[in-house]
Image (cartoon, rainbow, N blue to C red; front, side):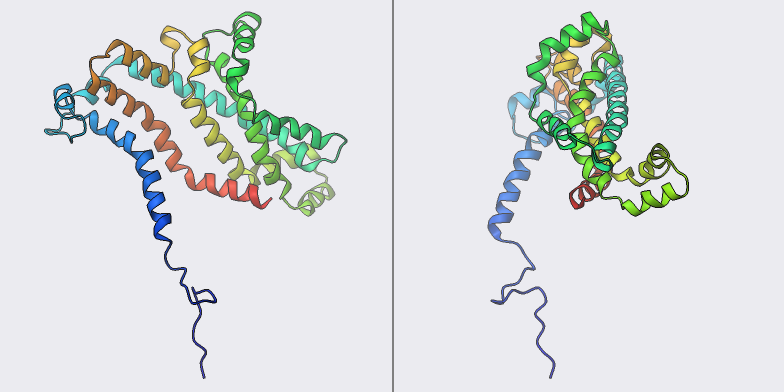
Length: 286
């Protein structure tokens, strides 16, 4: 006689096919609180100032494209976007290169003080950039003479991104089989050769994860660019603030500018989210 199927059920006969209504309700509330302001800003860009004044919570009627066209045809938006792109790319490159170089010995080498050194990076996660903003400003502008330059912003941003980079990459690199390294050494490969030829290609998912996090963090950074960049060197978040101040009465235009400013980072993050999850999963398993 065939036993009844118990797939998807607990011992008390409750099915796991659906979640609790309370969980769904909480999830909907979180989604609404997260996406609500974003959708309001996006839709606000398709309205006129008169429509917003008459009915702030209404939908566009009629829909207008003038606000977005005005922002996209302006030279200032593309200058801000170019500055943000260059700073974000520099920050990402520095973070990934130095992060994987720091995580490699912490993950694969046995030496005295290794865990203490790793704890320095862990403690760095608790160190906010605002605490060091004055010393950083003096160091970058006076000592290094890098004020109002892209690299002057990218260096400190990469420094503050290194702790999370090392924390994510260390278990990922440690999870690679030691037998692989031993086999490479038997073939005459040095540790540096193993690092470049074998470890880096295999650690691609982890490097993509920290790279995306560094890029998005740099793209959205506000405080350091505000203090270190001026005039034509300013990044897109600063451009949003400048546009909001200059065109304070043009509410619909501000909505359009803000929406366009967040699209590149949002699209980039959504396109890479599967790789981010894969990299974080590998780090957790490690």
